[in-house]
Amino acid sequence: MNSHKQIHILAIESSCDDTSAAVLRGTTLLSSVIASQEIHSQWGGVVPELASRAHQQNIVPTVDAALRQADISLSSIDAIAFTRGPGLLGSLLVGTSFAKGLSIARHIPLIEVNHLQGHILSHFVDLPDTAKEHPSFPFLCLLVSGGHTQIVLVTSPSDFQIIGTTIDDAAGEAFDKCAKVIGLPYPGGPHVDRLAASGDPTAFKFAKPRIPGFDFSFSGLKTSFLYTLQKLPSEPKKEDVCASLQKTITDILMDKLVKAARHFGITDIAIAGGVAANSGLRNAVAAEGQRHGRRTFIPELKFTTDNAAMIGIAGYYKYLNGEFAPLDLPPTARM
Image 1: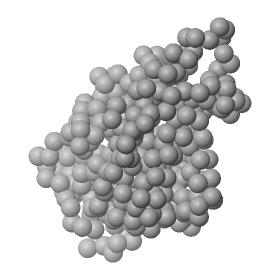
Image 2 (image 1 turned 120 degrees about the vertical axis):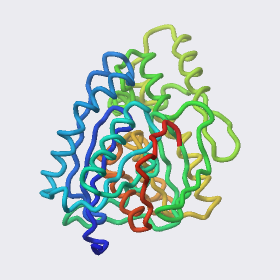
Image 3 (image 1 turned 90 degrees about the horizontal axis):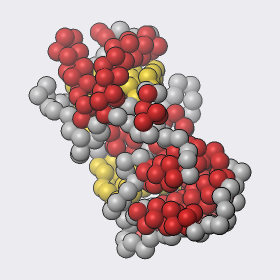
């Protein structure tokens, strides 16, 4: 068996609308290739059937490109890690089926990965010739995306405890739905972030929920957002609306994260997921670390969106534990 540093993992991610493949040697990323799907923007959201068809077209050239970029052959791959879920079932089925077929053809063991755990463990992906600091266990991770908003207590690469979650919409949904109200294209989050940079975050006050514990709620924010804009006598500046919306969502997220850190006595906090690309949230996490002496971990932008590198690092730790998947394991939309 190869030493831990020489273990090569081929990773495949197809949970939503990006087809991605990556190769890791140990924890070091050798290649990462992502084929994005532009077709969904005209529909205002991801169309599952179109997504799965695009995955079928993209997966072979994407995996081939990742192997070529890493300058490695399939004969050197020790395991194939793939996203089992959660996600769009049709999209997951494409990645899972391809991974199984490759496993059978080349006699390479399979490793199934929880997409959300991959986001969290992306903080442990190393880049060649680049020194990188990793969170120390235990740490808290605020996982924020279009479909999930959770605070996770991470005590090891295989031990995750969800201590807070949204009881309705996710933070990414709140960004996208509010953005749609003011005429911004899908996905709305990046457009809100861009406009917020030149707006006044104190221009509007939107409702913040009072949810006990560490759970989140964003449905009331959407209602407050719509009600506030409808009552205005004239068209507001979109920059001010976006800046106020971004500050409100960031405040909601940070309030719970700081509360959890104090409760558990955690000094290392991290963020992950698509909304971790939001500049307001990134700045707020960094400021929290400076104010209270916490170590903060903010992912590079390329690791915030769905990518196979995070699936590969999760697969690497499962490989070390001997956690291999049977060929009859089905994908699952919810995990």
